[in-house]
Image (cartoon, rainbow, N blue to C red):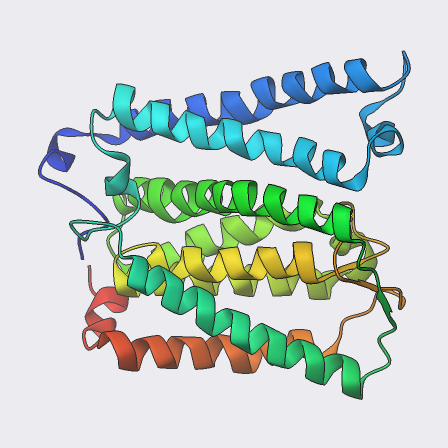
Amino acid sequence: MRRFTNPLESAIDIRHYLLGAMVIVFGLVILSPFLVDLIKNAVSPKGADIENLSKYLSRNAFFLVNMSPFVIGFVSIVFCSRVIFHRPLKTFITARPQFDFKRFFFSFGLWSVLMLTSFFLTFIKSNHQLVWNFQSEKFFYLLIIAALFIPVQTGFEEIFFRGFLLQLFGKITQKGIYLVLITGTLFGALHLMNPEIEKLGLFAVIYYIISGLFTTLIVILDDGTELSWGFHLANNLFGIIIVTNEWQALQTDALFVDVSPPAPGWDMYVTMFLLYPLMIFVFYLVYQWKNWKKVLFKS
């Protein structure tokens, strides 16, 4: 299992990864809030805090502001790959000679179909209350922003968690199951600050961690982030442009607004215990993951 490495990898020790992590964290913790603060001071009354920024911006503008940290994070990773590691960014993305767009779009399309099917069944057979929210001008601006920035947002998370951190922990252990548990749980833990945790409680924590384990597993079995990135992009675009709700932190001018009270739905159980295993099984058949036992359980 190559972990997206190249011939230069043997010359790179753990200190490079630690230095790279410091650069990326600096970009996210220092530069991103500084940029958002500049925007806040430009558009809001003096003394208004960042929590009230949404009151002075349209939903599309507020969405754009929330994407800015991921742009900085992505640039930070590119900087690290070139200046600290002296190797192409591709080596943090895939072990293949080139990024496999067929894998990426296959995963994107498969998850899009499964989500849309689940969505229609959920809202036909459940007590979710949907409100049609299409506003042509706002929606088409949302489409443009989402098309430009959601690939960057999901790309940063994929490369950082399932490329950079996967290789970092791979310096400590090459046993795939440990890497799935470590990086998958870290990805889930990142979402503990989301407002869904307050609304849905422990269930939301479990959902995010299982999602992190699922995406890390398919990256390790496939030796590349293409499948995970395609899934991640489809998932986030759905939540941005198809349906939003009234209680999450980032609300958009999506096609539908779910105005029902926050509660774990059966669709989330279906996702975790039916759709994720189904995705893994389809990938297993299509991409012939015959050595999965060796990848996961042998160093």
